[in-house]
Amino acid sequence: MNRRTFLALAALSGATGTAGLAAGCGSGTGHHPAPPPLDLSTPLRIPPLLHPPADLDGVRRFELIMAAGQFELLPGKPTTTWGFNGAYLGPTLRAGRGDRIAMTVRNALPEASTVHWHGMRLPARMDGGPHQLIAAGHRWTPTWTIDQPAATTWYHPHPHGATAKHVYRGLAGLFLIDDDHDAELPTGYGTDDIPLILQDKNLDDHGRIDGDPLKGPFGILGDRILVNGTYNPRFDVTTTRLRLRLLNASNARMYQLAFADRRPFHLVATDGGLLAAPVETGTLALTPGERAEIVVGFDPGDNVVLRTLDTGIDIGMGDLDLIRFVAAEQLRPAPGLPAGLPAPAPIVPPADAKVRHFTLSGRDSINGRPMDMQRIDEVVPAGAVEIWEVENSTGASHNFHIHEVAFQVLNAQGTPTGGHKDTVFTPAHTTVRLAVQFGPFSDPVEPYMYHCHVLRHEDAGIMGQFVTVAPGTESAVPRTYAGPAHAH
Ligand code: C2O
Ligand code: CU
Picture (cartoon, rainbow, N blue to C red):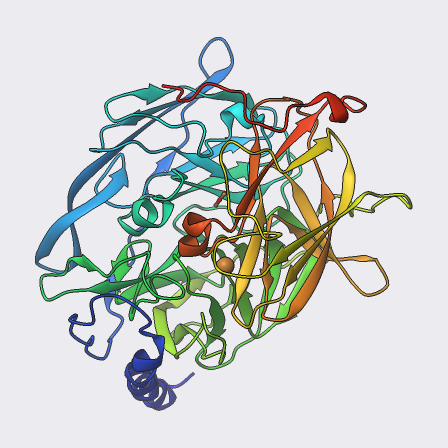
């Protein structure tokens, strides 16, 4: 792109970026000032990588501490935020398939919380859902073995009724899983393998996080976008290709990502791992909780903005600029894009697969029942492949996340399509059919969750609980939660 085209696009993006705000502003106190047009010039923060070597016993030991701190969301305006091992967001954790993990999570917040490993395949007691509450001043020490394909997963609090608040204040981070059979994709963390954690906020005059994440139909639909906690960000490109690991860690906003010059890019992974082959596209939708990995090419001197397009959908209103990529005049060559990738096998339901139906019919319940931590809604045999039908019978957007599993969306012919996922968009008045692969873990007491990942909806009760148990024991399993009231 030449400089004149860039300037024209920059001017255009500034203008539409501002114009889209009124539509995008769905909540908050309404007193926060409208943001000025962006120049996208602040160097992108890259979350520090936490990749401890294995100890002599072969275990990788991670330490996280949840605490309040001082952080500049706007330059020169320090405010109080929450984070892991720092004031805002958390380190990027990294481990490989087969690794044994010992995690210590300390809660130095003024209130109880939990840490859920979103996308991780692990026993329910280690999952960090609402039952694994960590009281203020206490710690939690889950252990597990990583046994799943390479993927971009993440972690965030899950205290029932307060998840929206805890995530909005800043608690979230990435957890990257490597596999021996990693593809020939860029892997230089922070150089050509770049995390992009997308969040929208409302900020007041003092740069403070503003707005009530439990107000209005969706909670927060903020008018300022943060990428890795950086407002108005720029990334300096030094290689001919970048792998971008995208996470929608917003409370409610969906993104329809595209480059301002409409350059094509390749989708290489979804929530649960790599695709069988790169898929060329120009736009990518991402609802809260979803991840995607894309590979995008750059020419020397390129200067291009990644933005979200107005979808016309209630949780995706407004054009907003996310980040500018500025390519050096000399770029180092990146690996070529592989024709095929080591994707996990398709999830094919057996002919007699159990079908379960979930109706999202309001803002606080599934199948007519609001979340009840004392009620076990579903009992699933460990290792099963089932069909879960999720019907959004409302006129508003929701999405659907299932803990521990991998699933694929089924097409009208019942064939799995797309990549492995754990979170899926359920637009208004639609039904999605999922082929769901459950893990091998059995525990008749501790449940996993399924829920809408619009955090205001999750907190309001669009959530249910399931246990996975030894096959054949389903009918003997208590339907009332029988575990400890609180685990410290
Ligand atoms: Cu990302 Cu139950 O959550
Ligand atoms: Cu919802």
